[in-house]
Image 1 (tube, rainbow, N blue to C red):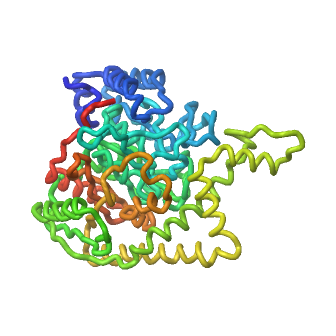
Image 2 (image 1 turned 180 degrees about the vertical axis):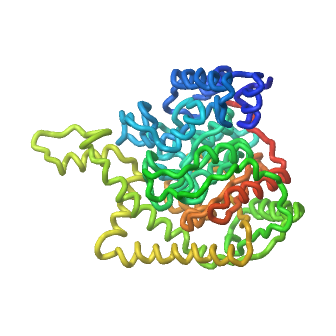
Image 3 (image 1 turned 90 degrees about the horizontal axis):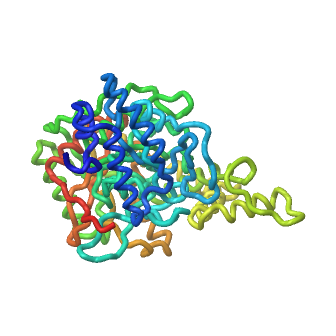
Length: 494
């Protein structure tokens, strides 16, 4: 067989079931690939012993014929997911040494299905960032490069380690989380597929919270079929999460027919941004033509409140972060600052939080605390919530008018060099311009690799679907994937 670590989940599933390979062999191939890829900064807490143990158990299940789709499949887990007995730091110094005594619902679902955990993956601190440069572990690096240049590029954020690991074949797939685009933007930057399901589809229990009304877990995979397979296992109703929806989870893979004849695809005029690169414009036009050729009806639509999405998001998300991150105070777990004689509890809070949080997290906590303060609550936070309701209404009206999915660019550019934009937070926040509306409205969205730019870097297109209709969205993405025929891989340099 080919190098086992380069297989898709679907290929590995078939090979495991026919006995062509074993979970142990597959796991060793991935562990070897991950060990040799230190330059990418993707894996931050490797768990080889646990992986071998899980692979052995998976092989026993395969032998007995009791093998769910993910049985024996080696995965990487974003450091935001709490994993029992394994460091779970959310890439922050303030959670140094934290090893949970419990398992997040999503990772429990994966392990119950026989999946193998290779280790924890790099990310932006507390999922706050678009370039994976705010991590306490250092940067994750994109396996793609511009032509023959050696410039290190961002894999996107916050799920940058997950994106880099999947694109470089260090694991067969990975978990990600998406608060404002943190699955879809890194997927687009690294030429892989990433889906954010409808808010409430995947349990948030055991995932370190950033902005509770926006966060949602999802899979980051090598293709659309793998996304369908992995998403089905990740989704479940969870009584431990009050926002988890008690809605049946269909067999998403069975819905991948590639037939989208008669489907209505909306093209929102508000996403045509000033200064958008020609390559992104062309990719969008090409994607539109591909879906039209596959039998879909293309319809121009309007989402008039889109222009207010980014400012509304950067009020709501920091406000929720300010509240969620108040628990990190050095009292119960994680980092605690060394105190001088005479210091009291106030000094302990101040010093611990000053030492433990990075600059971007501090910035967002301060913004959030400001917009929630007595004099500004109505002026900022309540106004942002009203704008959010209008953004959701725009989508509701479009879907009510018969639109099945909406096609947009996934990002305003290809991957940029590490360090380029980190000095200007507003410039960095603009990376989320096409993705935040989906989180504000709680909708499912998927990024599919659809082409390369002039410098050989991958570009992605985003499809936005109706709530709870991930199966239909994945099928449209499958048709787009087949039409685009994207098979490029990064040349190995690490």
